[in-house]
Length: 409
Image 1 (tube, rainbow, N blue to C red):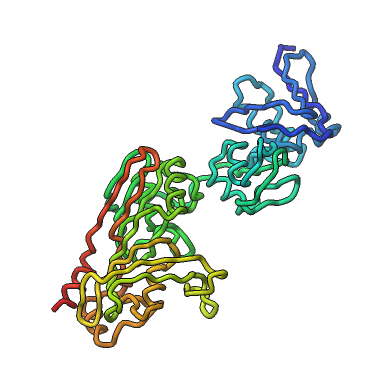
Image 2 (image 1 turned 90 degrees about the vertical axis):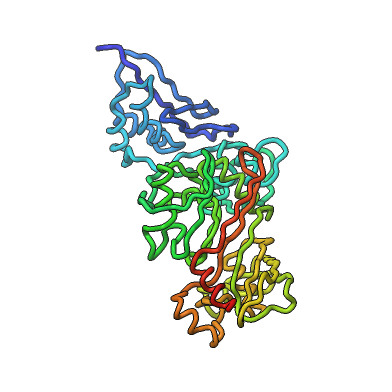
Protein backbone atom coordinates (compact mmCIF):
# COMPACT_ATOMS: atom_id res chain seq x y z
CA UNK A 1 0.00 0.00 0.00
CA UNK A 2 1.44 3.40 -0.92
CA UNK A 3 2.91 5.54 1.79
CA UNK A 4 0.36 8.24 2.67
CA UNK A 5 -0.03 10.91 5.30
CA UNK A 6 -2.58 9.79 7.90
CA UNK A 7 -4.06 11.59 10.86
CA UNK A 8 -4.56 10.01 14.25
CA UNK A 9 -6.72 12.01 16.64
CA UNK A 10 -6.54 11.00 20.28
CA UNK A 11 -9.44 11.22 22.66
CA UNK A 12 -9.41 14.59 24.42
CA UNK A 13 -12.02 14.36 27.12
CA UNK A 14 -9.67 15.90 29.69
CA UNK A 15 -10.10 19.59 30.36
CA UNK A 16 -7.61 21.53 28.24
CA UNK A 17 -5.19 23.99 29.76
CA UNK A 18 -6.15 27.38 28.40
CA UNK A 19 -3.61 29.04 26.21
CA UNK A 20 -3.39 32.58 24.83
CA UNK A 21 -4.42 31.33 21.44
CA UNK A 22 -5.38 27.75 20.71
CA UNK A 23 -6.71 27.79 17.26
CA UNK A 24 -7.36 30.14 14.37
CA UNK A 25 -7.87 29.75 10.65
CA UNK A 26 -6.06 32.20 8.37
CA UNK A 27 -5.75 32.43 4.61
CA UNK A 28 -7.14 28.96 3.93
CA UNK A 29 -4.57 27.24 6.07
CA UNK A 30 -4.88 25.95 9.59
CA UNK A 31 -2.48 26.88 12.35
CA UNK A 32 -2.73 24.67 15.40
CA UNK A 33 -1.13 25.12 18.77
CA UNK A 34 -1.04 22.09 21.06
CA UNK A 35 -2.84 22.36 24.37
CA UNK A 36 -2.83 19.84 27.20
CA UNK A 37 -5.46 17.21 26.49
CA UNK A 38 -5.62 18.03 22.75
CA UNK A 39 -3.03 15.96 20.93
CA UNK A 40 -3.10 15.66 17.19
CA UNK A 41 -0.49 13.44 15.65
CA UNK A 42 -0.03 13.94 11.90
CA UNK A 43 2.49 11.35 10.79
CA UNK A 44 3.45 9.03 7.98
CA UNK A 45 2.09 5.57 8.64
CA UNK A 46 1.61 2.43 6.58
CA UNK A 47 -1.59 1.51 8.41
CA UNK A 48 -4.96 2.71 7.30
CA UNK A 49 -7.35 4.42 9.69
CA UNK A 50 -11.03 3.60 9.45
CA UNK A 51 -12.71 7.00 9.89
CA UNK A 52 -16.07 5.44 10.75
CA UNK A 53 -14.53 3.29 13.48
CA UNK A 54 -12.71 6.28 14.94
CA UNK A 55 -15.89 8.33 14.89
CA UNK A 56 -17.87 5.61 16.68
CA UNK A 57 -15.17 4.99 19.28
CA UNK A 58 -14.30 8.61 20.03
CA UNK A 59 -17.10 10.87 18.77
CA UNK A 60 -15.87 13.75 20.93
CA UNK A 61 -12.64 13.75 19.00
CA UNK A 62 -14.52 15.00 15.97
CA UNK A 63 -17.31 17.04 17.49
CA UNK A 64 -15.53 19.07 20.16
CA UNK A 65 -13.02 21.89 19.90
CA UNK A 66 -13.66 22.58 16.22
CA UNK A 67 -12.02 19.47 14.76
CA UNK A 68 -14.86 19.18 12.28
CA UNK A 69 -13.59 22.46 10.79
CA UNK A 70 -10.09 20.97 10.60
CA UNK A 71 -11.33 18.02 8.56
CA UNK A 72 -13.58 20.23 6.46
CA UNK A 73 -10.57 22.23 5.31
CA UNK A 74 -7.86 19.56 5.44
CA UNK A 75 -7.98 18.94 1.70
CA UNK A 76 -6.78 22.54 1.24
CA UNK A 77 -3.90 22.11 3.65
CA UNK A 78 -0.58 21.72 1.81
CA UNK A 79 0.57 18.75 3.94
CA UNK A 80 -2.67 16.81 4.14
CA UNK A 81 -3.76 13.95 1.87
CA UNK A 82 -6.53 12.64 4.08
CA UNK A 83 -9.29 12.32 1.50
CA UNK A 84 -11.84 10.61 3.71
CA UNK A 85 -12.92 13.65 5.73
CA UNK A 86 -16.24 14.19 3.89
CA UNK A 87 -17.28 10.71 5.01
CA UNK A 88 -16.15 11.48 8.55
CA UNK A 89 -18.28 14.60 8.59
CA UNK A 90 -21.22 12.68 7.19
CA UNK A 91 -20.77 9.95 9.81
CA UNK A 92 -20.80 12.51 12.63
CA UNK A 93 -23.90 14.19 11.21
CA UNK A 94 -22.05 17.28 10.13
CA UNK A 95 -21.31 19.09 6.92
CA UNK A 96 -18.23 20.32 5.16
CA UNK A 97 -19.82 23.77 5.17
CA UNK A 98 -18.83 24.71 8.74
CA UNK A 99 -19.91 28.25 9.54
CA UNK A 100 -17.90 29.19 12.61
CA UNK A 101 -14.38 29.43 14.00
CA UNK A 102 -13.77 28.98 17.69
CA UNK A 103 -11.10 31.04 19.44
CA UNK A 104 -10.29 30.04 23.00
CA UNK A 105 -7.78 31.28 25.51
CA UNK A 106 -7.49 33.21 28.74
CA UNK A 107 -7.38 36.86 29.69
CA UNK A 108 -3.84 38.25 29.62
CA UNK A 109 -1.70 39.78 32.37
CA UNK A 110 -3.30 42.47 34.50
CA UNK A 111 -6.84 42.02 33.19
CA UNK A 112 -8.95 45.04 32.21
CA UNK A 113 -11.90 45.92 29.94
CA UNK A 114 -13.38 42.85 28.30
CA UNK A 115 -13.34 44.17 24.71
CA UNK A 116 -9.74 45.36 25.02
CA UNK A 117 -8.45 42.13 26.58
CA UNK A 118 -10.27 39.93 24.06
CA UNK A 119 -8.91 41.98 21.16
CA UNK A 120 -5.35 41.59 22.48
CA UNK A 121 -5.75 37.86 23.11
CA UNK A 122 -7.60 36.91 19.93
CA UNK A 123 -6.04 39.18 17.32
CA UNK A 124 -9.50 40.43 16.32
CA UNK A 125 -10.14 44.15 16.11
CA UNK A 126 -11.77 45.78 19.12
CA UNK A 127 -14.80 46.84 17.06
CA UNK A 128 -15.19 43.27 15.79
CA UNK A 129 -15.08 41.99 19.38
CA UNK A 130 -17.80 44.47 20.39
CA UNK A 131 -20.00 43.25 17.54
CA UNK A 132 -19.49 39.61 18.55
CA UNK A 133 -20.31 40.48 22.17
CA UNK A 134 -23.54 42.07 21.00
CA UNK A 135 -24.41 38.93 19.03
CA UNK A 136 -23.94 36.71 22.09
CA UNK A 137 -20.94 34.88 20.64
CA UNK A 138 -18.61 35.31 23.62
CA UNK A 139 -18.42 33.31 26.84
CA UNK A 140 -16.33 33.92 29.96
CA UNK A 141 -15.61 30.86 32.09
CA UNK A 142 -18.49 29.12 30.33
CA UNK A 143 -21.02 31.92 30.86
CA UNK A 144 -22.33 34.27 28.18
CA UNK A 145 -20.84 37.78 28.19
CA UNK A 146 -22.19 40.83 26.36
CA UNK A 147 -20.87 43.95 28.15
CA UNK A 148 -17.80 45.39 26.42
CA UNK A 149 -16.83 47.53 29.43
CA UNK A 150 -16.93 44.63 31.90
CA UNK A 151 -13.74 44.38 33.98
CA UNK A 152 -12.24 40.90 33.76
CA UNK A 153 -9.43 39.32 35.73
CA UNK A 154 -6.20 37.84 34.46
CA UNK A 155 -6.47 34.14 33.64
CA UNK A 156 -10.25 34.09 33.06
CA UNK A 157 -11.01 31.51 30.33
CA UNK A 158 -12.88 32.80 27.29
CA UNK A 159 -14.31 31.46 24.07
CA UNK A 160 -15.31 33.42 20.97
CA UNK A 161 -17.41 31.94 18.18
CA UNK A 162 -16.52 33.81 15.01
CA UNK A 163 -18.89 33.30 12.08
CA UNK A 164 -17.18 32.57 8.80
CA UNK A 165 -17.12 35.34 6.24
CA UNK A 166 -20.31 35.38 4.21
CA UNK A 167 -21.04 37.00 0.87
CA UNK A 168 -22.34 40.53 1.23
CA UNK A 169 -26.10 40.61 1.27
CA UNK A 170 -26.04 43.89 -0.62
CA UNK A 171 -25.28 43.62 -4.33
CA UNK A 172 -23.07 46.02 -6.27
CA UNK A 173 -25.07 48.49 -8.37
CA UNK A 174 -23.85 51.13 -10.77
CA UNK A 175 -25.35 54.18 -9.06
CA UNK A 176 -23.64 57.56 -9.62
CA UNK A 177 -21.75 58.93 -6.62
CA UNK A 178 -20.49 62.43 -5.84
CA UNK A 179 -17.03 61.56 -4.51
CA UNK A 180 -15.46 64.42 -2.56
CA UNK A 181 -12.31 62.55 -1.50
CA UNK A 182 -10.95 59.02 -1.85
CA UNK A 183 -7.77 57.13 -1.05
CA UNK A 184 -6.99 53.47 -0.33
CA UNK A 185 -8.33 53.75 3.24
CA UNK A 186 -11.56 55.76 3.06
CA UNK A 187 -13.96 57.63 0.82
CA UNK A 188 -16.00 60.78 1.49
CA UNK A 189 -19.33 61.04 -0.32
CA UNK A 190 -21.69 64.00 -0.82
CA UNK A 191 -24.96 62.10 -0.49
CA UNK A 192 -28.05 63.42 -2.28
CA UNK A 193 -31.39 63.61 -0.48
CA UNK A 194 -33.52 60.54 -1.12
CA UNK A 195 -30.65 58.03 -1.08
CA UNK A 196 -30.82 55.47 1.75
CA UNK A 197 -27.42 54.73 3.30
CA UNK A 198 -27.67 50.94 3.67
CA UNK A 199 -30.10 48.11 2.85
CA UNK A 200 -32.91 47.55 5.35
CA UNK A 201 -36.52 46.46 5.38
CA UNK A 202 -38.23 48.14 2.44
CA UNK A 203 -34.92 49.21 0.87
CA UNK A 204 -33.08 46.07 -0.18
CA UNK A 205 -31.19 47.78 -2.98
CA UNK A 206 -30.60 51.15 -4.60
CA UNK A 207 -28.73 52.33 -1.48
CA UNK A 208 -25.42 54.07 -0.91
CA UNK A 209 -23.91 50.72 0.11
CA UNK A 210 -24.96 49.17 -3.23
CA UNK A 211 -23.31 52.08 -5.03
CA UNK A 212 -20.14 51.83 -2.91
CA UNK A 213 -19.80 48.09 -3.52
CA UNK A 214 -19.72 48.84 -7.25
CA UNK A 215 -17.48 51.90 -7.01
CA UNK A 216 -14.98 50.32 -4.58
CA UNK A 217 -15.26 46.85 -6.15
CA UNK A 218 -16.19 45.33 -2.79
CA UNK A 219 -13.16 46.78 -0.99
CA UNK A 220 -14.96 48.05 2.11
CA UNK A 221 -14.42 47.49 5.82
CA UNK A 222 -16.15 44.37 7.10
CA UNK A 223 -16.70 45.60 10.65
CA UNK A 224 -20.19 46.89 9.88
CA UNK A 225 -21.33 43.41 8.79
CA UNK A 226 -22.64 42.15 5.47
CA UNK A 227 -25.48 44.68 5.28
CA UNK A 228 -23.43 47.75 6.24
CA UNK A 229 -19.88 47.28 4.91
CA UNK A 230 -17.73 50.33 5.58
CA UNK A 231 -20.51 52.32 7.23
CA UNK A 232 -19.16 54.25 10.22
CA UNK A 233 -22.02 56.74 10.60
CA UNK A 234 -25.28 57.53 8.85
CA UNK A 235 -27.41 60.45 7.80
CA UNK A 236 -31.13 60.18 7.16
CA UNK A 237 -32.51 59.23 3.75
CA UNK A 238 -33.93 62.71 3.18
CA UNK A 239 -30.91 64.56 4.56
CA UNK A 240 -28.22 65.50 2.05
CA UNK A 241 -24.52 66.03 2.60
CA UNK A 242 -21.16 64.64 3.62
CA UNK A 243 -20.56 61.12 4.87
CA UNK A 244 -17.29 59.19 5.36
CA UNK A 245 -17.03 55.46 4.62
CA UNK A 246 -14.17 53.15 5.64
CA UNK A 247 -12.50 50.94 3.04
CA UNK A 248 -10.32 49.06 5.56
CA UNK A 249 -10.86 47.78 9.10
CA UNK A 250 -8.00 49.94 10.33
CA UNK A 251 -9.67 53.06 8.96
CA UNK A 252 -13.02 51.95 10.37
CA UNK A 253 -11.60 51.54 13.87
CA UNK A 254 -9.83 54.91 13.75
CA UNK A 255 -12.93 56.74 12.56
CA UNK A 256 -15.20 54.93 15.03
CA UNK A 257 -12.92 55.99 17.88
CA UNK A 258 -13.20 59.64 16.82
CA UNK A 259 -16.98 59.42 16.61
CA UNK A 260 -17.03 57.79 20.05
CA UNK A 261 -14.96 60.53 21.69
CA UNK A 262 -16.91 63.26 19.81
CA UNK A 263 -13.79 64.70 18.17
CA UNK A 264 -15.32 64.56 14.68
CA UNK A 265 -16.20 68.04 13.40
CA UNK A 266 -19.72 68.11 11.95
CA UNK A 267 -21.84 71.08 10.96
CA UNK A 268 -25.30 71.03 9.39
CA UNK A 269 -27.22 73.79 7.63
CA UNK A 270 -30.94 73.80 8.25
CA UNK A 271 -33.91 75.99 7.38
CA UNK A 272 -36.19 76.22 10.42
CA UNK A 273 -39.55 77.82 10.99
CA UNK A 274 -39.56 81.17 12.77
CA UNK A 275 -36.66 83.13 14.23
CA UNK A 276 -34.81 81.55 17.17
CA UNK A 277 -34.29 83.73 20.23
CA UNK A 278 -31.53 83.97 21.18
CA UNK A 279 -30.06 83.89 17.69
CA UNK A 280 -27.36 81.50 18.91
CA UNK A 281 -27.37 78.99 21.72
CA UNK A 282 -26.91 75.42 22.88
CA UNK A 283 -29.58 72.75 23.16
CA UNK A 284 -28.84 70.00 25.67
CA UNK A 285 -31.23 67.10 26.12
CA UNK A 286 -30.97 63.31 26.15
CA UNK A 287 -32.49 61.65 23.10
CA UNK A 288 -34.28 58.31 23.13
CA UNK A 289 -37.28 56.52 21.66
CA UNK A 290 -40.56 58.33 22.14
CA UNK A 291 -42.81 56.62 24.68
CA UNK A 292 -45.87 57.40 22.53
CA UNK A 293 -44.49 56.65 19.05
CA UNK A 294 -41.65 54.13 18.78
CA UNK A 295 -40.82 55.34 15.27
CA UNK A 296 -39.88 58.78 16.62
CA UNK A 297 -37.07 60.04 18.80
CA UNK A 298 -37.74 62.49 21.62
CA UNK A 299 -36.16 64.43 24.46
CA UNK A 300 -36.19 62.04 27.43
CA UNK A 301 -34.83 61.87 30.95
CA UNK A 302 -31.04 61.77 31.04
CA UNK A 303 -30.97 58.26 32.46
CA UNK A 304 -33.30 56.92 29.77
CA UNK A 305 -31.71 58.26 26.61
CA UNK A 306 -28.31 59.25 25.26
CA UNK A 307 -26.73 62.56 26.19
CA UNK A 308 -26.95 64.97 23.24
CA UNK A 309 -25.67 68.51 22.67
CA UNK A 310 -26.32 70.78 19.66
CA UNK A 311 -24.81 74.25 19.20
CA UNK A 312 -26.82 76.43 16.81
CA UNK A 313 -26.44 79.93 15.40
CA UNK A 314 -28.58 81.91 12.99
CA UNK A 315 -26.82 82.54 9.68
CA UNK A 316 -29.62 84.47 7.98
CA UNK A 317 -33.07 85.74 8.91
CA UNK A 318 -35.59 84.74 6.24
CA UNK A 319 -39.32 85.34 5.73
CA UNK A 320 -41.04 83.42 8.56
CA UNK A 321 -37.96 81.21 8.71
CA UNK A 322 -34.23 81.19 9.46
CA UNK A 323 -31.14 79.60 7.96
CA UNK A 324 -29.21 78.14 10.90
CA UNK A 325 -25.98 76.26 11.39
CA UNK A 326 -26.00 73.36 13.84
CA UNK A 327 -22.72 71.97 15.14
CA UNK A 328 -22.95 68.60 16.82
CA UNK A 329 -21.10 67.85 20.00
CA UNK A 330 -22.68 64.39 19.93
CA UNK A 331 -24.24 62.42 17.10
CA UNK A 332 -27.60 60.90 17.98
CA UNK A 333 -30.38 59.68 15.72
CA UNK A 334 -32.37 62.67 14.37
CA UNK A 335 -30.46 64.95 16.77
CA UNK A 336 -30.76 68.24 14.85
CA UNK A 337 -34.42 67.59 14.01
CA UNK A 338 -35.37 66.70 17.59
CA UNK A 339 -33.40 69.51 19.26
CA UNK A 340 -34.58 72.30 16.96
CA UNK A 341 -38.17 71.11 17.28
CA UNK A 342 -37.80 71.06 21.06
CA UNK A 343 -37.10 74.82 21.12
CA UNK A 344 -40.06 75.58 18.88
CA UNK A 345 -38.25 75.86 15.53
CA UNK A 346 -38.72 72.62 13.60
CA UNK A 347 -37.10 72.13 10.21
CA UNK A 348 -39.18 73.14 7.22
CA UNK A 349 -40.58 70.14 5.38
CA UNK A 350 -39.98 67.75 8.30
CA UNK A 351 -42.97 65.37 8.27
CA UNK A 352 -42.13 63.84 11.66
CA UNK A 353 -40.97 66.48 14.13
CA UNK A 354 -42.93 69.60 13.25
CA UNK A 355 -45.40 71.41 11.04
CA UNK A 356 -44.34 73.92 8.42
CA UNK A 357 -45.84 77.39 9.15
CA UNK A 358 -49.06 77.78 7.20
CA UNK A 359 -47.73 80.88 5.40
CA UNK A 360 -44.85 78.82 3.96
CA UNK A 361 -46.74 75.71 2.86
CA UNK A 362 -47.73 77.11 -0.57
CA UNK A 363 -44.05 77.95 -1.24
CA UNK A 364 -42.88 74.43 -0.42
CA UNK A 365 -45.66 72.98 -2.56
CA UNK A 366 -44.80 75.22 -5.50
CA UNK A 367 -41.10 74.32 -5.23
CA UNK A 368 -42.04 70.65 -4.69
CA UNK A 369 -39.83 70.67 -1.60
CA UNK A 370 -40.87 67.50 0.23
CA UNK A 371 -38.08 66.70 2.68
CA UNK A 372 -36.62 68.10 5.87
CA UNK A 373 -34.46 71.12 5.00
CA UNK A 374 -31.23 69.69 6.40
CA UNK A 375 -27.79 69.38 4.82
CA UNK A 376 -24.56 67.93 6.31
CA UNK A 377 -22.34 70.82 5.19
CA UNK A 378 -19.01 70.22 6.99
CA UNK A 379 -17.06 67.14 8.02
CA UNK A 380 -13.61 67.16 9.60
CA UNK A 381 -11.49 64.50 11.27
CA UNK A 382 -7.98 63.14 11.70
CA UNK A 383 -7.19 60.71 8.91
CA UNK A 384 -7.17 57.36 10.77
CA UNK A 385 -4.07 56.07 8.96
CA UNK A 386 -2.13 59.11 7.74
CA UNK A 387 -2.82 61.05 10.96
CA UNK A 388 -3.43 64.28 9.04
CA UNK A 389 -6.25 66.72 9.70
CA UNK A 390 -8.78 66.68 6.85
CA UNK A 391 -11.78 68.97 6.43
CA UNK A 392 -14.50 68.95 3.78
CA UNK A 393 -17.23 71.47 2.93
CA UNK A 394 -20.33 70.91 0.80
CA UNK A 395 -22.54 73.76 -0.48
CA UNK A 396 -26.28 73.46 0.06
CA UNK A 397 -27.91 71.49 -2.77
CA UNK A 398 -30.07 73.07 -5.44
CA UNK A 399 -33.42 72.37 -3.76
CA UNK A 400 -32.41 74.04 -0.50
CA UNK A 401 -30.73 76.91 -2.38
CA UNK A 402 -33.98 77.53 -4.29
CA UNK A 403 -35.97 77.54 -1.03
CA UNK A 404 -33.54 79.98 0.61
CA UNK A 405 -33.74 82.26 -2.44
CA UNK A 406 -37.54 82.20 -2.34
CA UNK A 407 -37.60 83.04 1.38
CA UNK A 408 -35.14 85.92 0.94
CA UNK A 409 -37.55 87.80 -1.35
